[in-house]
Length: 406
Image (tube, rainbow, N blue to C red; front, side):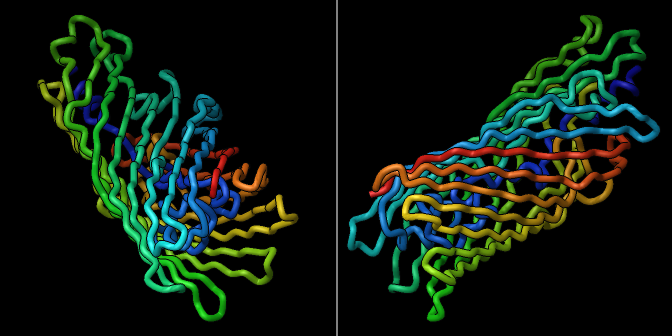
């Protein structure tokens, strides 16, 4: 029995992070344009899209938005004809920004609160992969005060400090069949924090094109005293003592190069190339406050590689009060063969977006967006859990935002 328990426990500490955990829902205008924005002056979301562009914004801004995210994924085990569906739960990524500066001043201050990483999935407690994962709710909230300075009429720079608040709630089954008992359950729940920074530069060229380059650093979010709760028969309680765990979650650095084009006064075109440095995410380690012969500290390999995304979008000002937006992109997964997990059944993906902007009053904008994202189906056998089968995933994301500017 001990051997079985040990095998079960080595599977416990999953908190996978993949491209699927990079949320990217950071501003409604920018979502409508295919997530582009590093080289644009749309609104206060420049705080995160490019701190260097904030000083060039023509006005001051207070805004907020949210994008309910419906993640639909299925799993077909090898040799089976019965698909398993994850529960239809809705995640709620959000963003809020404020930008202020005197009219003629060469500088502006900004602050952003946004959710660049997160995940919500629930596969239930009866499916084949329950020993790898039953459910996961993960979110990272970044708070970023920012200073941006205009160096010339065509050049500005900016930087921000990032404070991250991370939360995780994970459950998975424990195999206890050899003890004559039904499956047990492990729950790991906790929160932590981390620090980082964000810098950017924005430039207007002589041919009218704008250029933006921005870098957001890696943030190591450390959970020092999360709670572990084991649900097992009383006869096994001493082997699975409740207590605390510690872990460090590396949220990767990102670099984006953006270009903006303005062929007519009514049209704005944009292209962004996004690079995500997932290489530091080599493993996920959990340290428990109390260990036993059945419950040992664990190391779960990830060995991610770099990820890329290519984005394009357009805005057409149909009237003085209406803007139409659309865009799309393609993302290359950082998850190598053998490392796909049910936390984020990752693969290369494409997406399309659309948006509508309405000027409600002189100083108030209402922005709506919608995104459809398709993750390519991927047949895999995980090298650690030996979970073998094919994941298929689609994501649907409506969004709504309000922007007040003066």
